[in-house]
Image 1: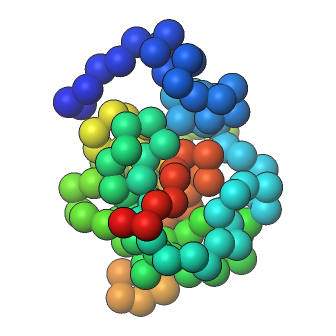
Image 2: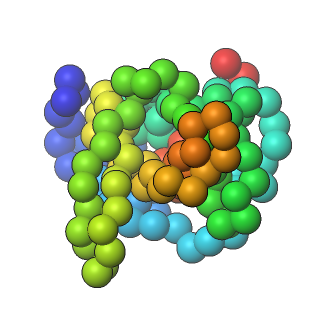
Length: 129
Ligand code: FE
């Protein structure tokens, strides 16, 4: 990771919920976040470091209650890691730049990728571009 900030830095910058999700790998309840039903156009940036992560043009309604995308804004905008927590084998998705936990990626998404990036609203911030 290019940037290594202290836990105090993140605790100060983020709300308690954002901190628990972004830095503690938590998950917001389904249908509770700011963006699961959002159809506005723009670019979703990392809540922690501002890196562009997902485009609204890649967002779709997965029915899951979390914002879902079929691809990241750039292939190297995110990094992935094997996650065996909570009795499941999943692929965690993190911000490539700051390591923020974003969510998970599943292989049940729509074409053209067949992927579903299932992302916490608390980890992202929609901007015009
Ligand atoms: Fe980041």
